[in-house]
Every structure is written in C-alpha cells, then in structure tokens.
Image (cartoon, rainbow over the protein chains, first blue to last red):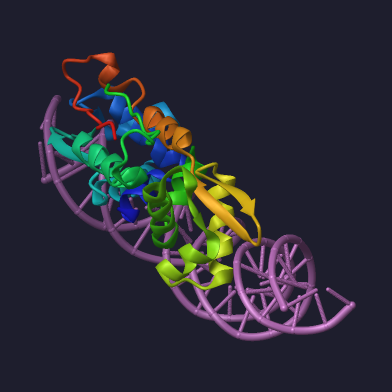
Length: 101
Length: 101
DNA sequence: ACCATATTTTCACACTTATCGAAATATGGA
DNA sequence: TCCATATTTCGATAAGTGTGAAAATATGGT
C-alpha cells in the first residue's frame, strides 16, 4: 500500500497517472504520454516501471508501441484501505463520502 | 496534492493516519498514538508535522495533551483529484467505484 | 539484411527523507 | 515555585529517489 501511494507521490508520475485515468481502458502509447507531458524517454520509462510495479498501471504491446492504461481496481482498493474502519464504523459520525465516477 | 500523497506514502505515517481515521473526529493524544505504534516521541512529532502540513490531520490542545484527528475533507478531495475526468467522462466505460463509509 | 523509430537500461550526480539521542519548551499539579 | 509529564526542536547520519545523457534492445517497413 505504501508502494502504491509512493508511486503517486511524485509530480511527474501523478501527471502520468491522471493522463492515463482520463484516457480510459484503451490507454496511451508511451511516447504519446512523453510528448504530452514533455518528459525525456529515459525518465518516462523509469516512472512507467514504478507505476507498473505498484500495480497502478498496466501495459500491452501493439506493434512497436507499448500502451499503458490505468488499473482502476488498485485505485479503488487504495481508497478502501485508507478509509477502512473509519470513525470506528460509526456511520453517523463519519465524514467520508467519496464520489463514484 | 503531491504533498498529500507523499505524506501518506510512508509506513509510519500511513499507520498514524489510519489510526486517526479509525478514532474519528475526537482523535487521539500524541503520546497515545506513539505507544500504540511503538514509535519514539521525536519521530512521532516529525511525522505529525508532515501530516499536518499536508492538511491530512488537525490538532487541538487539551491540557497537557495534544489531540490529533483526521481531516476527512482533504482525503475526499484527494480521491476526487485522482479520479478526475476519468475515462474522459464516459460513465459507461468507467471502472471507478469508491465506497461511501 | 538494413534502416528508422519506440522503448528500456545503465550510470552518475544532486537532492530529499527517516530515524534517534539529547536538549529545549510547554503545561498542570503539589 | 518546583517537579513530573507531554511534546517539540536540533543535529547528525544513513539510506533512498529523480533526472538526463548515452548506449542497448526491440519492432516493423523497405
């Protein structure tokens, strides 16, 4: 879980992740994201690896391109973990209310 | 936002935060959390400061004790930011579904 | 087979972070 | 006021992290 949060706790990776969330299940090609965010290929690859290792994103090969996309299940799991047993389970006192997309 | 995620992306702080989430609006005294998680006072104070600065927790003085509690609004805001514009706004394709406490 | 393009790996460097011991700063009670 | 307790600050150290340049590794087209 710390690994998941760490992966998102970095400006470049947070931008990458949000771009992939917006791009939906199809995702985006690695280079496409690199151009959009103006990040060097080496740095890009480093961050993709970090996000992948945390399970936050997935990749698939398509010709010469590698498409990355967000894994929503992991994100949902993270939020669930953070709010687990909140307010000792007292629904009335609880101030957690997260939107559904 | 990166600051918020960074604050949670650390084992000790994540444990502190979850303990405070579970303790609800009343929160817990600093020392109480320190004993519960077996962390030295100095380290504890360092992490409280980090979480406070990120806005994830709040403090109030009560006699000799300082009570810390989770700020649920910031957590909710974080999740909203992470899922913003997900799947380009296509509700049907979207796989984000976060529970309400 | 060769070339152009897409991505990843390696390496080195600067910067940030977590931890603890010891000292300092509240706060309340006798 | 003086003491005990609660918490924070300071200082030092060890470990981790983000970055780009350059080289290496696919993959597809000609």
